[in-house]
Length: 399
Image 1 (cartoon, rainbow, N blue to C red):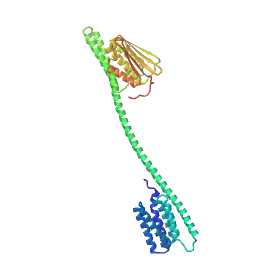
Image 2 (cartoon, one colour):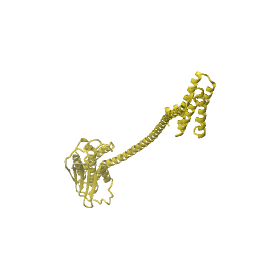
Image 3 (cartoon, one colour):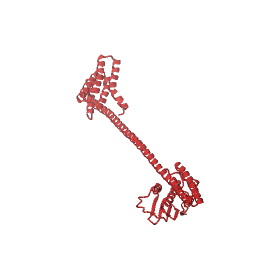
Image 4 (tube, rainbow, N blue to C red):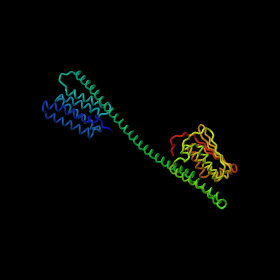
């Protein structure tokens, strides 16, 4: 516990109440017995209080001997009456409960008896005794109250220190947990970034290379039959290759798709892409925009464009369709993208969610808290229905 000023002063008080009266008495008249009794009283106090004060018998012997020495000193010189005040302090410091008041009464009785003068009436002695007990008891009560408050103060300080230590430990645990959460968040961010890059690469490089392979195969078939047609095919291959290379570089740099960087409307970008796709695949495609077109958040527009690209890529690769309809619908709170073909369709349950392309589309839409639905059946074509919040253009949402 914290050591207070009272804790430092209290042990010295008995010595002061013994030595100060002795100095005055010896300066007034030198007496060896005063010096001897004073030294004995100080030594007796030190021996008992510091060694055996916790034991009842030594404590009783301490007060008996000390009161005897005080009585002799008071008989020699009344200035030693002050020493009685020091004994009062010791009564309340060493004796428990009501025993302290009994010690005070005994001390007052010794002081009154030591100053007994012939001819003093008993009533005067009794009144002196009562007044002395009352004054000493009141003083002792004040001392005991101070001591109790001191103990309470130290207990409160100890409790506060304990709580402070617990709070510090809790803060350290919270800091450790916060560091773990940050580490987990960084790991999750790395994983999300890897997934995002996988989607970007799949939606750009894979689609472009697939288109290149398709055109190369068509060019090979046409070389022997129609050289101009072969050159046209090869020109298309060259164009698609350049666009794929450009998109690959943008994906690595985690930038938005090229067409959207120039503030073009999403509907216009979809039409341009659909026209190129139609020319390269020979499948008729129409693009319709409903509602009030408006700029959306970069990631919303990017995700919708990637979904449309992947859906058309799947049509070219799997559907054997003759026509495709792409519809972009702007509503109050959401924007919807619908891609439908008249191809052969498939059994959605049998595909267990589809391949990487369908998974990538679903992940993009889910990441924006949107809905992704596949409507298909064998022989009835396929519809990709996507709905995402119409988040207005603004700062980056983060990956």
